[in-house]
Length: 437
Image 1: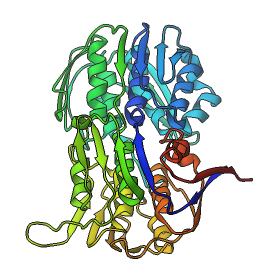
Image 2: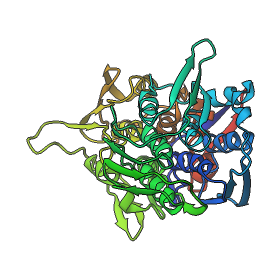
Image 3: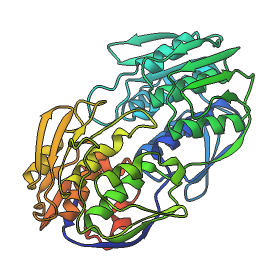
């Protein structure tokens, strides 16, 4: 176990470049299982979740060559399907939620898959029905061993069909798409997720020989093909990290430039921070956030208080609500944060309340933040990171607070943010990593 010790009040300035997108990397790495030819993926982030996903593929026989930092070649020409049933493989799956995305490509190419109930953030129930129902509609048979908590999936021949997803699940859509590209016939997926991560996966699959149309919409049409071939792909900058850096710049920045953000793929994110009164300047493909000595939350046109809530793309990603909540604590005005998708993601606010934030937790999904208008700084404290996004939000809070803070369980932050303390210290932060017994 490791912790961060943070000296609050240090001002940040300079330039920072976002890492490759975690959620996209997890998907496209799994897609390499769909062909025996080499697939080169660039801008892969060096973070725990992605590295664990790569090790899972290596465990089942995928050849992985690291050509340069963030640049990998995957070749799945000698996959050991028998290893899927081993206790070692299933234990590794249980620790990584991204392991569920192995199902689609394994069933599509090899006719079988086996994964244990996946882990990941403790942010409430995260059901897998969309994944399983979609792949079952393609003709797969699912069996669940309740005692071992293991899913076993078999399919002699997947066949294209029409399906209306019960929710616009990002990973569920990705899994179904990866299965459908090698199914016999045409698959139509309505209410598909259309996040940039899914768009990127579809573009890679098309370069590999798939026939996917409707990319960037919620209606995908996939004409199955016999086989796929190798291709190259570059992962987008991580829009969640971009949003996290905007939040840091607003709270403790003396002028921060976020480089190469792929602005046209950020959707509503810059606009949402602007609704909190934060200056977010778009310059070529960079964002520049000047020092924010004062920022005031907008009201709706009718004068009612602002509400920020998550929604499927192109709505606001739920992964940034924790950061937006922390940033709101020093704004002028009040805002209701409505986290619709996960019932435990707002429970970290009790740590912020201990630090002096004025927050009313209405229920598991809603919190009202009354901003301090930078007149009452947060106080340093001791806290534990419950998940990736709450962890980075607590880090931002600690950086803005008076005094010293300690954040435990920072392995959660490491799952999503590459070498974060060194990158922030280069901007002027004072963050020290310590090992805890």
